[in-house]
Image (cartoon, rainbow, N blue to C red; front, side, top):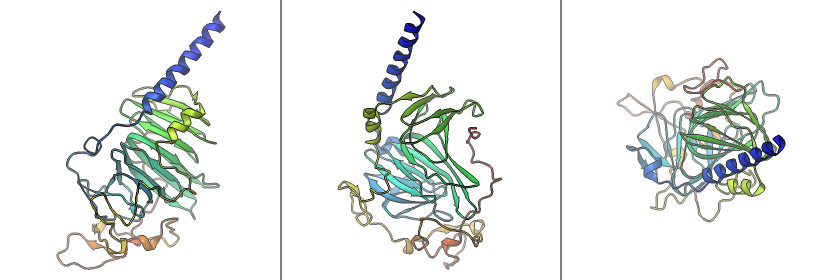
Amino acid sequence: MNTKKYKLASICTKVLMTAVLLFVWSPVVASARSVLPEGITVGDTFYPGYGSPIGKVQRVKGEVVAVHSHAAEQGFRLRPGMMLYKGDTLFTMKKGKVRFRMNDGSILSLASGTKLVLNKSVYEKKKKSRSSFLDMAFGKARFLVVKLINFKHSEFKVKTPTAVCGVRGSDYVIEASEQVSVFIALETTSIEVSGNKDPKAKPVVLNEYEMSKVYAGGYPSEPVKLTPEEIKRVKEQFISVNPDESEPEADEVQADTGTETGGKTVAMSDVHVLVPEDALVKMPNDFEVGDVEKDDIGKTVRQSGITEERSIISQTTLIEQFNEDDEWPDGFPGSPD
């Protein structure tokens, strides 16, 4: 009798979790007004951020806006080929999607109605060090994180309003909101999920095709296996993260066509940026940009706080040196064990 009750309870739990999945992963109904904070002016002119780029946009559908941390009231529409910088916040509008590549080779794909902050991404191949921290306020994202073999220090963490996810190399999906976050491990993947309530508690480990959810103030639920149909439905909401699928589809935004209103992308070599005095640092001799081409970075910059316009060092010399003793970005809980 007890065995029958246990089986019935197990079936009910799986049915409930499936219902939650279907609800959470229903198409997002969002608009530019609801996703983008008030007071932000959006244009088509690209301006690089401070320091060296940490990523590069590969594919774009619909409207996707990026905002630099030093210019919180000025956004620009993303186009393939544009660079991303530390502190950038990305917003995907209604029907907007984007795929970009990080400096360590990892590929991220954001669905419509998503806000993601690139808090930190440091990749130093010769020092065998990778440290990435992302903050996902709401929306849906897929992460294809490169597994770095024999690296002394390798962290890739994503924080949501209710949880934090840590990986070393995986293909997984996160859906985030203020109330609940859903984590899904895809092919040959294992990820660790901890609730923000007690980051030091033992994390829940998700393996291939398993899902867990974390409500605000709670702990991760036990893993539930998803069906192939459910996994397919989840993947369909994103631009593919397959590195071999680089050709844009017919409805994607092209690098040289700009927006629907006829805007045009500004060439990197023609762009200037205001750089404060304390942002100018010496580039290490062994520094490598990785997959981001140095020639794509603006060759001249304009220094802020001066009355006479003059050229200073090239932006390739603006690089944040990573120290493993650096503190984590504000708001990030402890690392899962």
